[in-house]
Image 1 (spheres, helix red, strand yellow):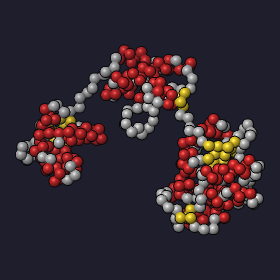
Image 2 (cartoon, one colour):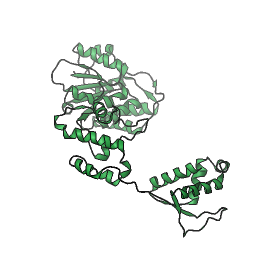
Image 3 (cartoon, one colour):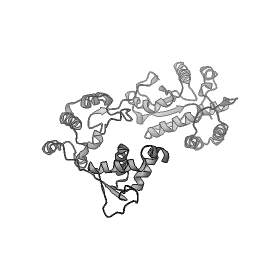
Length: 361
């Protein structure tokens, strides 16, 4: 029970920023941690609480507030206690910190000396040496620079399973640009028309539709009045992260980007997430494709296992309505309400070859 008492005090101070607590608060925490009063009693109950708290007091971790009343129990304890916060001394040499202050901001570490440890200092020396030679260094990937500075190519990855503290750059207020490192997007599958300057891009959610579009474009067939310069296989939601690779192929701000996916909650979610991720770019639905899909579907395709978010539906509806496609918006709402969907694979190569693919709604 002693260890649970120590964890209570650590969490209490960390979460509430308060040092003083009541015995009742501690006991309530222990009862909850043992999943009820019976579990608490099986593990010694109040007597174990008493012994654990006295042990923490003798270790200098907590002290009783002497002007508080006793709790009336046997053996007695004061009703109120105070967590003893021991100030951690500065570990790093202040003169060395001063030398590096021309390029690094140590103010966070001065306010939080608990982060002053040997490993962090080694990282900081590596960062400082890099910054001194920054002008003569080449750009690298985040993984390459992480390996150089932190001896781990995945050091800066978020949500690490090992819970390693990788916030050194945040504490120093250092950016990726400062370290001349870049998070490169994973390469997506694409087809490029033989022109130098890419202007129009169509992203297809699914593999089959990508190849149908590709075959049509290779034959010089306009699709819904469009002749794209670049086709991208989105691979579902993977496009949300991988689209940053577009910088290797074109100037993103100069592009007209059309998106075509399944008519279902997942497809709408991908589009909303994608557009919000790249909100500075000219991204639109390929509305003509969606209209054709709604017109040619003549049966119900059940939508199973997809989570609905009305924000996704409304996001798509707003775009339909802004182009005076309200009647098709009503069809989308009906499909949504009936838990039905329309897969984009209905627009296949054979359908495109029929010759009735044009840009009219």
